[in-house]
Length: 499
Ligand SMILES: Cc1ncc(COP(=O)(O)O)c(C=O)c1O
Image (cartoon, rainbow, N blue to C red; front, side, top):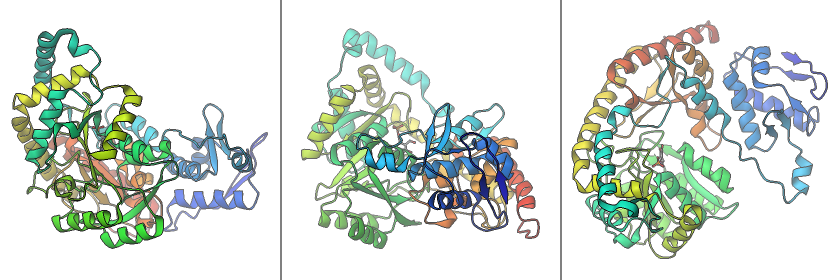
């Protein structure tokens, strides 16, 4: 039991954490603070202790406090005011004031994680960026020089909102190689796949509409939904991706306006949906008239057997809006993504694109077009896939060697991530994070990717971007991570050795 005494605006806070309880610490904190708000011990506008101070007082990791505060903010119970601190939300005021805006603060866990992972000497498996050595810098250098010399001012003038016509034609031809039959007029060039997702969301969803997605899901879609005020409902997954029985229940219960899904090399879990399930999904969505926003950004980053075709290739009812791009297989920084759609969805996304940024930078579009036309993609993809496969093999061996028994994971056949569950008897991923940083290694905390905290095991998941480092660094990183876990587990559960 910890009682924190505060003067001025702060009140005494009674937080009887049970450190040996199986309930994760951050969740206990959420519950205890919620109780105090409900019982009136904490009132609107009361100030909470800074995260570092509370973590020190409770002798827990700061990340647990940050996670609890973040979730309480998302639930509307706390409000963060930069430079002033965290306060109990003025609930009645908010409810009575139709002009009050919900918080759109950046995810503080992600920010803290990123800051800690960027320190010198840390082997970071936390990001979503392809390894620098995979980026075809000299090819893109040539491409930029070539298009500037060839097109002059046109290369740096405004481009058509729909995109540079030859690039749209090339994307349509390229998509045909994946089984998607579309005309160049159906291709909208976007600022990365992220903007493609955002445009589709803005075009087809209104405030309060329900979006179904896998639970866990891509962090960027959760972020978009937050700022666009779209309600996200998570649908359970298994090793084959979104479960169709759970989808049918969610449709019946929540009347969704859209389904967002990444059927191939899912981020964060790495799952690939079977052809059978893809068809089942299309039947369900087609029968109910629910558009599917397909995220295909990892489709080509495949180094096992070929995945089934994208949903858009199987889409007979025109329900699929296909979003993809070249960030994960060529260059993230050129920000070239695309949407393939038709009918009113096409018209609406184009309108939103026009309002958002007029056009995607023409120089980048032309350079990407030149790169694709030169035929360089095939050889480049081969090299990247080979390196990713080697790194995948290295991480599998290193995880077996260094992580504790009871760690659960599947071997990914594509994408950039290994998704693993730590032993449930040991520390949570958030608890492990700070210790891991001290040991010189960083990962992404799995709980961030969940749409809600209904699954108590979510606190034990870790996402590793194993493609970020060569095999020797992977080996060293996993050695450090195993060491961090053991050190913490010894304190966390001194009686139960599962090593
Ligand atoms: C599943 C998923 N979709 C979309 C994106 C965004 O891609 P881009 O960099 O092309 O905007 C990412 C990036 O991490 C991702 O993981």
